Amino acid sequence: MRMPALFVGHGNPMNAIERNEYFRGWQDIARRLPKPVAILCVSAHWETQGAWVTASAHPPTIHDFYGFPKALFDVRYPAPGAPWLAERVAALVTSERVQQDPARGLDHGAWSVLVAMYPAADIPVVQLGMDTGRPGPHHYAIGRQLAPLRDQDVLVLASGNMVHNLGLFRFHDPKPQAWAEACDEELQRRISAGDHAALMDPGSLGPDMRLAVPTPEHYYPLLYALALQQEGEPLVFFNAGVIGSLSMTSVLIGGGLQA
Image (cartoon, rainbow, N blue to C red; front, side, top):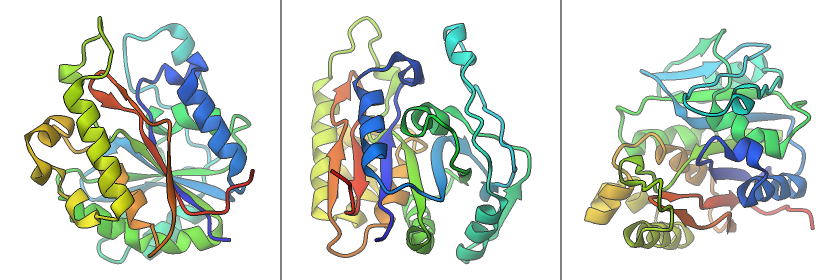
């Protein structure tokens, strides 16, 4: 059975310790997945020039934020790295040279979700950096080249947010904003229809979508996940919904889920 692929809306890093509905959604989806031999995470929080992959055998936990409680900074996710997977990724991506970083660790786009999915931290994790100066089709093409990993029991976990505009987030009033809900629904509709061409250029989908994706780093991970979808392959949404101007909607691509 081919390993499913995931896009998760990771949202606030506090989701890692608040044990809320999103945390429980990540727990449930991991419980129903086949156990992967390794995880390749494409996170919104590693922007690079060119393509990079982590190659550390023991990646540290990166706390790439500020202003949060000490309890969040105390979180450690001591999963091993997988230099062999870094080599495999570099070999699969033939459209450009993938450089290997022997020191970089796991940022919160990865570990804030993985602490819920695999709390034992016993599955090797590698991260892939994104050159966000490149357009959507560039990232989709890299995702397509990574497809063989699914047949090698590697879980590709793309972590971002389909709608992500912190500039318009009302911290005193986090109820869903109408334009954000409409964009989330439109993106779900396009994803369900397999309209990947339009999804590679969300700015072309109207002025509200340009509010939804003011910068590309949280959106582009979605393209890596969608690029892994085979023709006719099913998908399901989970953790669907919007907080303020931020979508938590997540997508599982592929079958093989356990009951």
